[in-house]
Image (cartoon, rainbow, N blue to C red; front, side, top):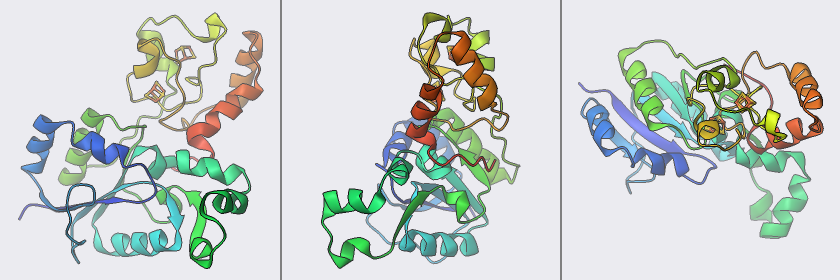
Length: 247
Ligand code: SF4
Ligand code: SF4
């Protein structure tokens, strides 16, 4: 029997699920191997009671999300998180650094329905164990297909761990820091092939913190290059307001 897969969205803009629809060829290759029972973005049905693999997009921002994740973990043999929201808290966690109550009130008013069940944004593996991770904003579909294939074969997760600069250097890109521009490659997890810097855009840290990231050394490099070291952490908050590295 083909593994039964569900795709679930928490707090996000569904961008990674949209990205999944953009890889028709490889998607069909992978989908030929699975029984896709529920895809929140693309189907109108309900979550089935049982399934084998759960793919989760989005940050955890409500008690309802926590309950759902508990059920998913008890049901699925493999849990996979996709995108920066699910892996690091991403953009939703930006609100954690400010007065959350005031932000909610300014957008939704102060009715009881607003206050009920909301939480400070967190990545999925702050709540349940996650077996496979696809970081990035949005995800790279080649990486998604490769990680899903590993999950279907029962192979271990292999999240790239080096800082982005290691790959960027091999592409012979002119370093943004040498041009007096802020780039977050020193502390960001690689795996995207230095996509942005190779397209002449600085890295904004969408793949999260590299496990060996050395902020102290990175600050020193910023100072040596004439850049404000406070910019390193300020810009890093965009995707990484939650700083714990769990993989
Ligand atoms: S700081 Fe940015 S541009 Fe410089 S090597 Fe690292 S990733 Fe490349
Ligand atoms: S270069 Fe940085 S911002 Fe761009 S995709 Fe890679 S990790 Fe994300």
